[in-house]
Image (cartoon, rainbow, N blue to C red; front, top):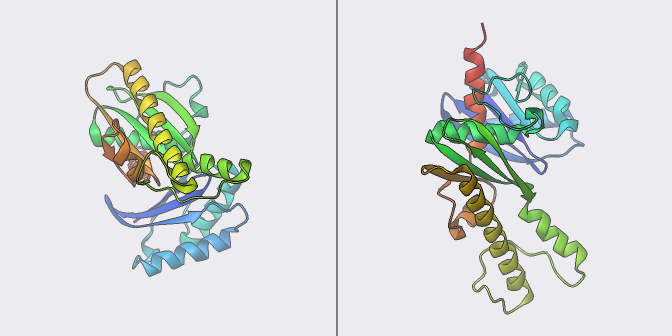
Length: 259
């Protein structure tokens, strides 16, 4: 079985695959203060509670955009499973040409998402990942990573409103009954959700125009993908576990390339 770990600025998402089948998945906070022992204890407990035997884990891959906890995660996997992790970064075989000016600048999660989307749809793609930041990544019809755009995530915008406007409360992000809000909470929800949807659709439209291809799939992933996609006019597919699938694909590609 394969353990796939995707580390973002806010959350760690882990999943276990038996072949191509996702057996279980979990979300943890990306705490920089936890030790490797703490992560080991938590993860092994989650595996057992889900009916997954930790002793059957025989491979591990990590995608990480939070460098300070990289060593802790590798220690955790070594201690918990006796495995050396494959880390997404320079030197890993992606099977995808990177057209960025400096390929080393591209976040690991962005490449993982691009690989998974092209593998799934076999045509030009735009991946919208709703995380701490919202990333937009373009893959051309030949399967090359073209680049993309990065915007503040909706959670950042919500927190900024609460912190910088003294009379505005924290609100739950949900679809309001009207765009014209009749109280502060629904007014904020309308501005946050529909303003965000407008941003997503406009960036996607402009990227599609630059890509100039007739066949193109726009796939959304991340925590808010389902909510935003229901209001969006440009998102075609929602894939909640796109990043984990990409990690599985990359792990297999690198295993096949090992002598």
